[in-house]
Length: 218
Image (cartoon, rainbow, N blue to C red; front, side):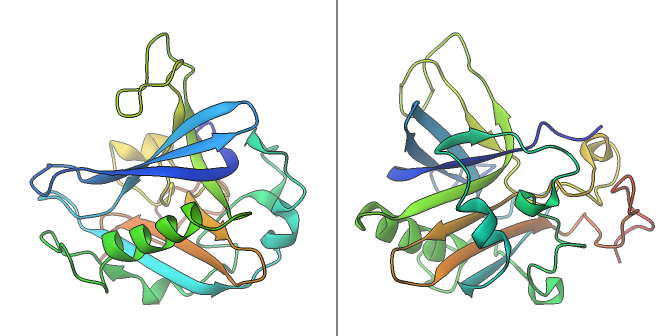
């Protein structure tokens, strides 16, 4: 079943890094919008069960940049057939998937690794007037409790900020086309930066209707 896909537009205001020995390392990102705060949960390192892949486009150019300009600040849930503001790693001509690289399970402090590259761009966004983030993924909340990391109420956010198709069972229940996650960060008068994420357990050879694997990854 496809995920509850949405795009969050807002301003990055704070980052929180998990510990090095965390079994599922993420960067938690606080995003402020016109209707209040949201949290992004972003995978940044591989664990001992699956290898995280990533691609950074430091000069991202794509028609979706014009489309997302028209989105309101806050959360937008695009129609399933509206591909103008949806990501699809297989069909969307966003980047060359063969150039995705694996994140090391122990990479910390390496400027070429995902954690450091993502942190550098997000810290720059915090310090730049007019910088915005567009997060594509699966929203959660509002919860009847505080956010566990940034303590705002009600807790809510966006996760599954990675490829959401081509997954083997049991994760294939979330497979679908035109619902991949990712991040686009826009800076005034400068190039947009995009981050794309996938797992080595996923395949890019997917059914055009269901997003299910046509075959298992090598």
